[in-house]
Length: 272
Ligand code: 13P
Ligand code: ZN
Image 1 (cartoon, rainbow, N blue to C red):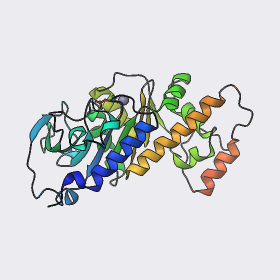
Image 2: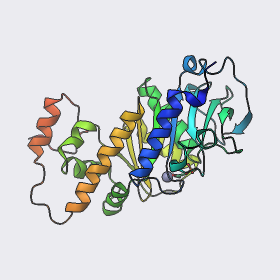
Image 3: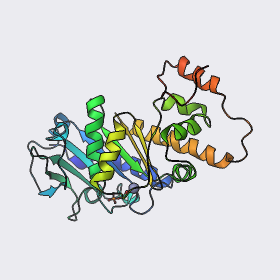
């Protein structure tokens, strides 16, 4: 039997966490990732589920994620350390059919558990799977300029989206549906999880004001690419704030959306 530690799933998460740390986004234990792995792939590494221990979820998981497997980063673990010791810093869990517990199948070797943001992750997986059955990744991180931008704007997703689209021509092309925005809330709670998942019905990106961002996708590349584009654009916005002479004209944003056949978030740019 192949070893799970040698799987492409562990390699991908190990590589991206190091990359994100090196972007300066994931100080200390900042950030967390969860990766839905289809059972057919899990079976390549585990003939059957051998449960190491059960970990209570602290909320009731949506039916759509029950019985599903997630590779997830551990709470209190540092992104920079995942690659060197994936079996301590990551865990593979199966959500119980009852929806109240996670069964640990692999990892969290030091007795650790999944991220404190697992409510937001699992609830976001559930929300995305209902609109996009191919969603596999939920990614949370603390990108500096995105947090700065959120601190400088009202907590209004149309305003946030407009400022992003007006600062970088890639922005409307990469996230034409815009970005969801939550006010500053207490993180690690079921409440912020529910609020995030509610936004995930309409958006693949959700900004947590004064904290960070969530991105989702079919692949790690897709989720990372969304967040990376927001962060690059937020950097442009913050570095030019108060100095802008050439803002992207509305016609160019509309033209880009037409060129790529994209449905733009309504009410952000007025069609003339
Ligand atoms: P965890 O260490 O529990 O994953 O928390 C990090 C974080 O980013 C909290 O929002
Ligand atoms: Zn965080």
